Amino acid sequence: RPQCIPNSSRTFVFAYSNDLDPQVITDTFKIFNPRTLANGIYNHVGNVRFDVKQPEEIEYHWSSDFGYSYVLSSWNSSVYAHLPDSKLSYSSSSTGSDILTVIDKFMNNTEAPLCGSTMLILLKRYLNEVDTNYIVARMRQQHVFVHVVSTIKPSGGLHIQTMYNVATKTNGLCFFTDDSDDYWVSEFLAYLVDDPYLIYAVNPRVAGTGTMQLPQMPSHNYMSYNTRITVQDSGLPDRFKMLNLQFDGYRWSNYIYVNETVHFHKGTNFAATDVYLQSGPYNVTFTYDYSGSSYQTLQIRLFSNIPVADWVPYDN
Image 1 (cartoon, one colour):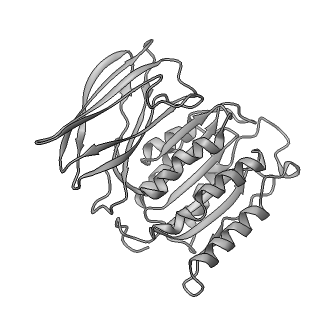
Image 2 (cartoon, helix red, strand yellow):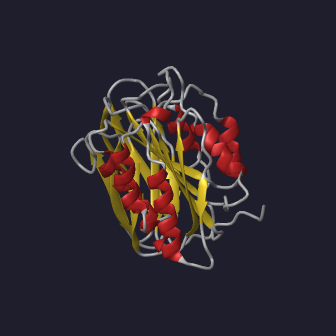
């Protein structure tokens, strides 16, 4: 494959569990189609239904001849032809999700570019696997990352944290939801299609109360950065009290404060906001308060709509 650089052609894959309600799929898809192709960063799109007895292939859509509207129409038809169907589901709740196999298929594909690509994954069934080192290593080679919306009311499987760990290690995000409004949760991920360039990613491990210095935050422009923060790594928060990100630069400072009522979204594990910064770099101080002594690995991500020259380094 060609060298993987930040301005490479990219693919956006919409992957969803067959155990979900079809309405969740159509509502979510309406958010991403047509905005996924609007900014020009993705020139291929794909879709796949997983957690089915007979595994299905990822269907890819692109066209250099017929243009933007043709791709959207093809993508739309394919998704609506492959909505969840209970007759195709696994017969046992002890069967784990096969999403890692789907990711591996994407990494092996020869139809669509890999470098810098995004997979949006709607997860209803947990995985039985814990070890993800192989797939994470492959994804990191091509800077592929996942954004996951995962239920806390699974249809089967064992391990709630497996896909959270994949997202953490590939600079992606994993949102947990109580299923009260999956459409609304997905909308907060859709903003990341509008601002697709990752600027900053750290995964602090926290427990109790404390303060730590995080890696410096680069900022080459005067702008607001779209910010997503997960506050707990397994299900909905039951230990989170507050966190504060302080950005201190040579001429400008700003902060992000989150507690149970500020920027935090009930029924989920994440906070969504933005922060305005002038040209940097910025020293970043992270203060947090959690009850108990159980450690949590958080995901802090800042995005922009301006292309970047370098990939954001991995934090672990």
